[in-house]
Image (tube, rainbow, N blue to C red; front, side, top):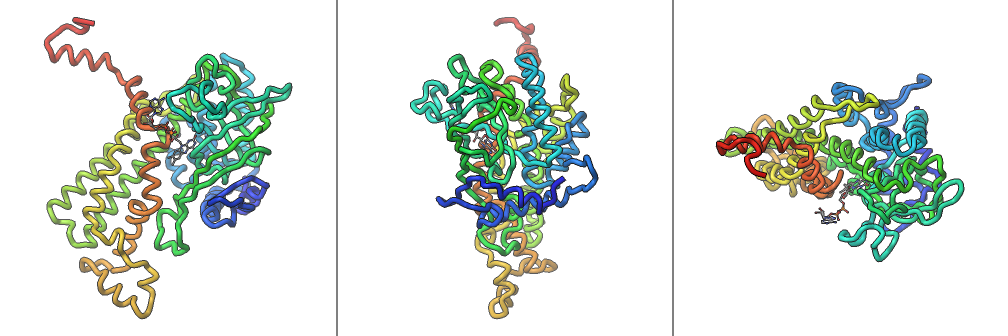
Length: 461
Ligand SMILES: Cc1cc2nc3c(=O)[nH]c(=O)nc-3n(C[C@H](O)[C@H](O)[C@H](O)COP(=O)(O)OP(=O)(O)OC[C@H]3O[C@@H](n4cnc5c(N)ncnc54)[C@H](O)[C@@H]3O)c2cc1C
């Protein structure tokens, strides 16, 4: 396994990364990128095991509901690239469909996952195309590169052009796992391509946005210092992909198999994170109401009860998605699609209301609290201490720390990122409605409807 130091060294591999309009030579020291790189390095160290053959649990294939639960716990303890390891599970989960097309794809996938595990690499899930005019299919776009495509076929591989957008952690990983973003139709064969490629392969550039804390005082950014995850536009300019790294090549009927499989794992991660955040928001609301001396006010207790209900329903969906897991023909446990999609949709849709509740309970210091450095200042600190005092028994410093956690999580750069991320990451809300509609037992619901109307099931239609 790699240590954090090995990991940071491995990123100095000539990868082409841009941030704020400038090329970055070393992502491990560039402002805004250094922090996430160091966070991942700490994650490597937390899980380091020198024993020969040891590997990170993110590469463990879940075989039961209990394994899935353990995976979720592990993802929270690991660094944020652990979420991305779902791409390996998605590839393995798509084996059933791919085997029928060509068993060689399955062999390559299994070799790739074994290599990720053996070399302790980190991967990015590279799916969302630029997409151009959303109303047109890939092959009818004004710019033929609006969706990533094969521009040349050689005896030993293919050459691809295009860009994938919003790619989480791309500048910090070793391998990019590329797959089609949606179901392709006849004429879209060149767009039906899935493969893995090293992040420093010739022709790849990454245009990165960072939401890293804008100051070094970690007390001011207690949440974002751990969870600020950069995304990147990954540009492929005539990139050669050798045959051995290709997992799908032109079979349009299978174009959605891997992405659909990944969507499920992505939304499970999203749901798990939202369940965690729901409890965190509720805890923050409760603690700050105590620090403010209003926890017993009926309207505040009512708001906090509402937040606790949101947290409980979100977690109930997560639990149901695990206990109702399906075991695939390859023996892998897959979370239940209905509960994952309905739960993720519900949690994302109601999140803004929970933030409103939290801000309502907490008050204006969420956005105006002096910093902890102000508290340290010998001239002004005593006044800050005096006037940031809330309820008896709560130290001003602790009350301020709560305000900074609330701001960092719900009212600052990371908060804006969360709002957008909750809605779009893992596929937009519409995708979750579609899957829910497909998975829901509508016939059973219809039978109840007929019965409520006093009619025999299927009386008409
Ligand atoms: C924080 C974050 C992290 C992400 N990480 C990754 C990642 O690691 N890898 C990755 O591949 N992607 C990632 N994504 C991208 C995410 O999967 C996409 O944002 C999502 O799939 C939606 O695509 P889009 O943003 O292009 O929106 P659009 O597809 O443009 O959707 C916008 C709206 O248009 C509607 N719409 C779109 N097409 C049509 C149509 N044909 N007809 C009618 N209506 C339509 C949609 O329903 C939606 O309401 C990430 C996104 C975020 C916010």
